[in-house]
Image (cartoon, rainbow, N blue to C red):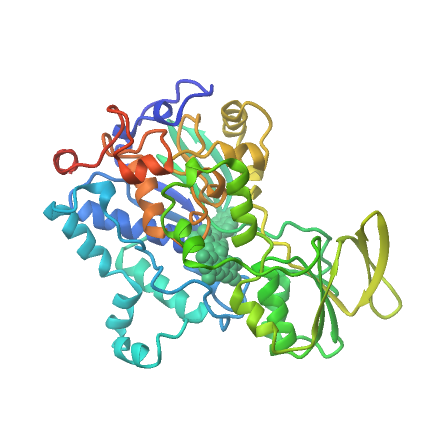
Length: 472
Ligand SMILES: Cc1cc2nc3c(=O)[nH]c(=O)nc-3n(C[C@H](O)[C@H](O)[C@H](O)COP(=O)(O)OP(=O)(O)OC[C@H]3O[C@@H](n4cnc5c(N)ncnc54)[C@H](O)[C@@H]3O)c2cc1C
């Protein structure tokens, strides 16, 4: 593997040498859908003769942990929001790897279909019954079973333990992984950070009367105590929406949602809006203001239409505009301090749940000094969400680092709204893995360039039959 030469800014194209992953794996923090989609695509591509890195996931819990009861942000019975056909290979477009007429491309498509949601149901002998039942949405638990099945079939290599340090070393990344008292070093040519991150923490959780999202779902699985009749939920995104639904409909509690806007908005889910999630063609040609507005209307701080229609069945939910600025113990309950329009007011509740979502910058707290310095140099200043979101290149990695750091969870603004979630895991895998294949790698171009090829300058990768064949 090549030595890091400098920690100074560089372009995505010029910052690492894809020809020299030299058998070193691509490391993924977390064995969730992104790691599994990458492992599946990597195994399929290697079987088809492409020299892409193997995937190694470092997981502190179990495969697909965040989709199982008592572990992540679910009780396992919640239904998957996206269609299950938006599975590990979706949208099944192999254009990155060759012409559609190329038999190798056909082989990739065929092998990928074997890892689909339908493939999973077929393997279990329940496909026809699923169709006859009207293709119901799977629960998170069923989705986790699918993910685990695919991870096993793709031979996903996992290292058990928590990543405590991520440092640039020997031209790639070195992770320090702690499992109980054991400490292991894991090396790779690139690093991808998955998962929503831990709760951002608007108010400090105390584990009894003030809970974060994971704390709520843990308690929900154990059984919410009877004393918790009135609940304040902070946040207006899908994380909050599923909690509100569980409290009001599943548990019959009175819920007040506190969110900074006039009301609880629903998500735009028309075919026109959904298209950008599956296929970001045209995304980078939109103005930044339009992209921000699209994300706000369709993803951030909005409830899905399914949650909205479920909540229409109950009178147990109300809302208050404002920001929660603090909580304190009152005589028998919790006093919640809410600020809005320059005024402050108090609302009392038995239980408060901070459902404001994850902190996507959590990984910066485990970066070693070299990695942190390289990131600051690459961003041209301190590490902020705004700078990171603007610095994500075609391969979903931060431009200007000496080894790839892929951050799909922060890629929505620069590359397309589907990359942080489950909307286009197949395209995500193509973008990431192509970065390690010379002549295939989409250079520091745009989402549109990567999809259409037609707009690409000559030196940029256009997938073609013999280019692919040359590097198998
Ligand atoms: C409950 C829930 C439902 C969602 N439903 C949908 C949906 O229907 N459709 C959609 O498009 N999006 C959905 N999302 C949003 C998004 O797609 C998910 O967050 C999705 O899980 C992302 O997949 P992932 O592979 O990035 O991470 P995850 O599945 O979240 O996996 C991350 C893994 O990382 C592990 N981990 C975290 N930190 C460390 C560490 N330091 N060391 C080692 N391991 C670590 C965790 O244990 C976890 O297993 C949902 C999110 C949640 C939380």
